[in-house]
Length: 77
Image 1: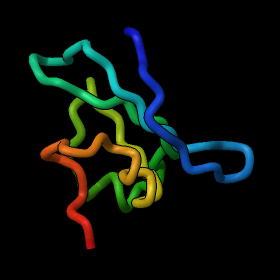
Image 2: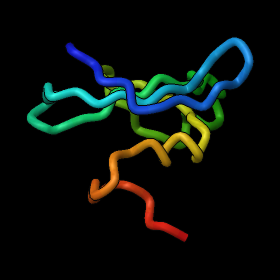
Image 3: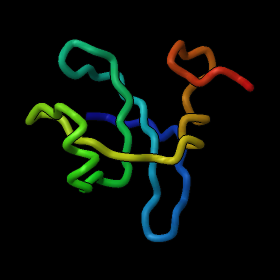
Image 4: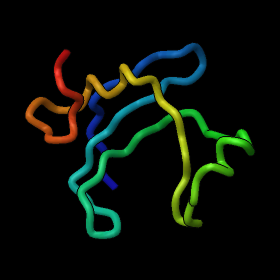
């Protein structure tokens, strides 16, 4: 998978990072996000996570790196 770097939010030893790719997964266009693994059993118990998915957390500020004009980008304000 070819990745195009869009931005990161540096947090000490790890940096949640956002990438774009032209490839699809499960028939959908996707972004690739590097973030912190969610391992808290209480949080995971609230979710129905298929075996082919993982749950991560990233700073909300990371979403500022979504391309302008993207229908999924956060609204200004």
